[in-house]
Image 1 (cartoon, rainbow, N blue to C red):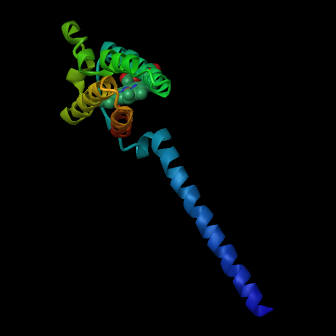
Image 2: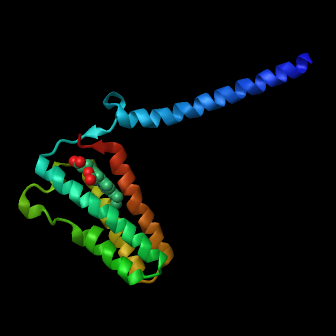
Image 3: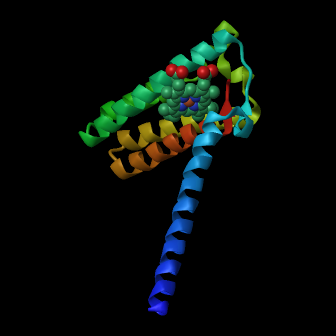
Amino acid sequence: MMRMVTVFASITLLLTLQSAHSADAAGETRSEINSPDSDHRQLVAMPDEASQLMRKDMLDHLSALNEIIALLVENNLDAAADVAETRMGKSSMGKHRATGIGPGRFMPVEMRNIGWGMHESASELSREARDGNLKGAYSALQKVTASCVACHYSYRTR
Ligand code: HEC
């Protein structure tokens, strides 16, 4: 009887530790985002106009990404190649340069590199799709989304 109680107690203890641990991990991510004190992302200041341009571009990236995935699923590789290059690829870069408030100039160099990497990967996606290489296109797509994650987890603008 005593032995059974001990076994039961150990199991309960293990389960408690386990759930405390996962709650901790989840709580950490949540509070990192919610509380400015524990938000370790670097704050990047930019003028309102630049920030607005950036948000507009970001929304377009998000919907381009969605369109690209839909086109890849339909095996419509040429259309996916077009969307990737024109909306996110290297040919989509520098369109705000003439305004003088393009967001790029306010980014620390590391951040800008992540942005360049994203455009580079979108162009790679476009090339692979154009060549009919679906696997290569998916692999480049993953590099694109990795850039979204890398930048968002490192920088914030407010
Ligand atoms: C080089 C850094 C960087 C990369 C790469 C990046 N973002 Fe962003 N994103 C930002 C910043 C900074 C903001 C906040 C802009 C602001 O509010 O001033 C933002 C904001 C956004 C927003 C919110 C827009 C709104 O309505 O306020 C969305 C959605 C978004 N990004 C999606 C994406 C997606 C999808 C990708 C990848 C395809 C991506 N981002 C890649 C830096 C980046």
